[in-house]
Length: 192
Ligand SMILES: Cc1cn([C@H]2C[C@H](O)[C@@H](COP(=O)(O)OP(=O)(O)O[C@H]3O[C@@H](C)C(=O)[C@@H](O)[C@H]3O)O2)c(=O)[nH]c1=O
Image (cartoon, rainbow, N blue to C red; front, side):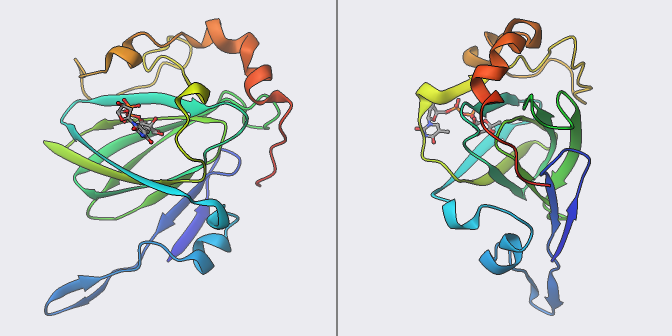
């Protein structure tokens, strides 16, 4: 399993290595030892979620107050365009974003650090996304930024996305910028 850093502080890109034989292949998708050795919060993963999305669907950009909820994301079926936006005012990569294609061929995983907005668009007819989270579900702490924010100008690959009512109503970055300090500012960013 190859684990690499990326531009955004604390983000990790994981590439498992399938072992092939005449039956097909086998791979380890998660190892507390290996993921933990790359500073992931393996002690705290308390929930695993799975969603299925139709082609073109965008979910996001979602995060959680109080620097809670890092996510380890993978795509066991289909292909997605995945976006991570750094919303931590104390981070050296504040307001930068990166995109990655995750699919069921390369099997790459992303560790999205707490305090980063996360969203994705399904590129295949259907895409299944699985993610472990290190905080139990608490909708009162959920916050969002508009997927089509003009300042971020994310180049979503497919036009006319299917988007939930909640995500259509998400505020622009300009509207929440003065709240980011309350959301995350007093919590320290520790991952390198
Ligand atoms: C996340 C979650 C949702 N739900 C419910 C709320 C709602 O009725 C339904 C679907 O929830 P949402 O519309 O929030 O699902 P979705 O838009 O897929 O939200 C997800 O988006 C991606 C981008 C992320 O990064 C995730 O952390 C999460 O925010 O499931 C739970 O009951 N438990 C949970 O842990």
